[in-house]
Image (cartoon, rainbow, N blue to C red; front, side, top):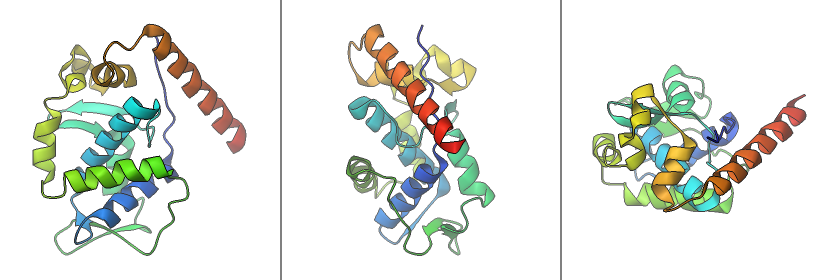
Length: 182
């Protein structure tokens, strides 16, 4: 079976997190909510565009799907130049920030999700994610949710050939990124 592997684009993921925080009324949000919304944004982007926004690894945990690297960055201070905490410990964007790595499509996805979930806390989003097919599959036992599981859950009848094409595209993207870094 085809295995799709995306690369984690830390800068783009950070921009997406800051963008979400700027879209929030009041400008502050729990780290868990940012993580859940970025998962839903990646899920939506995969279904509509065949590529995630962040490229992070998806984990199935008790409170629903999470983005592995982003969870760490939101809590370990790695992004403290761009994301701070308010007096309640909620995250808030610092400064103006640049969103040059986010496409208009990405921004629309993030804006729609921020608006749709504005009045819910992360626990309510978590409850919603417990109903997602990919979280409820056998893969959850391994702790990882594959991009293939998300695509099968969101695109009815997606073919193995389409999954293979997406895997090849992701491989090419990783190759181009590796060349640019070298």
